[in-house]
Length: 430
Image 1 (spheres, one colour):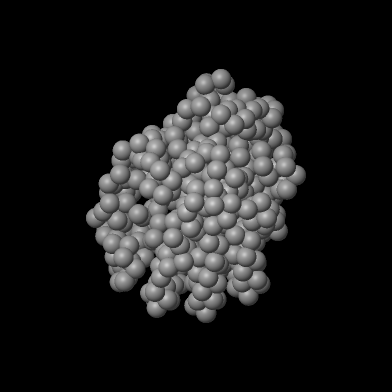
Image 2 (image 1 turned 60 degrees about the horizontal axis):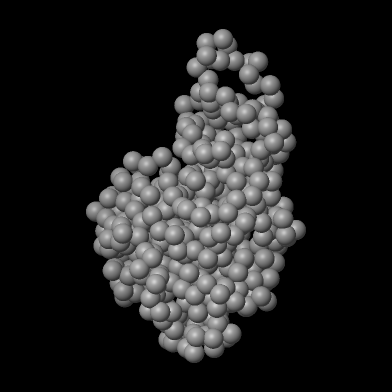
């Protein structure tokens, strides 16, 4: 039994907020109320751990539906165990893994490996399966069997799907299964050097870079197919103002359209690639200030309804290569909430409740997960956050440290992460 006292609770799903105590028992929330200690019997008090949350925000455990734990196949970068520890430190109690591992998650055997290893961690680890066999974009996986085996959705994230007929067939199948499909939207035919925006950054490095049209064209195509099929889709890591507008218009026509923004895309521009080099190289690339502002406006008006990290670990040796050879991607689980508080809340763009909605309730709802909310009888997955405190990240729970945010002062410190009623992370200074 665990009692969290005197915190300021925000539940983005119900809209309920205020000063409440939360009592958990058996992995669920037993009571939400005030002065709950007085309701406990003497024996219950003896067996109850009490956390003083005075001055802290109490919120649902965060849900990240776009992470790469590199397991199986690339565990020198990250594995399911270290990734889960990074997630807990960042306040995430549920994650959905991408399927671009080796072997890829295109068979029930690999799917079972990921899910079983995920059960050995302190958080909830879910996974997508692949849309196509071997992520080759030519033949659909057995989506029925993979869904029955526990896949919560489908994606070939990391490699765009270029064949329209495959996209349509996948959406039709996913619609019947009531599973979301997530899309990495970059047309490789238009890209010479991925990870760097075609503009100031590409000119600085003397390369052709990645044009915005590569994203725009595929977003437009997939939104059109989604509206025709009724499939639930997620436009991943949106990066261009034109793509944001395409999603905005599509959402007026269909309710199953979702889009996600990463903390790095709403916090940085291509100038970061000039400053930090490969540590700010990512797919799709960081673009202009106008694009960053368009993403923030999309978050503010609900066009973009998800915030996801695209946590993408790489080794220091890999990132030490020249700009055209180093892999794209940055880690993000541990810095995501502080960046959202710093850039969006303290920047005056979004209230905290809206940020929490996009980082818990909305992603959980898209994947039909019992997560992302605080209610009696609901899961005892929650976080305590000191929103006024600051921190500068210099080391990480992740196995990798590839991020341009190292050393930057950020607002917001996750002091405690609770999953299934158990404290799975506690800040050293609390």
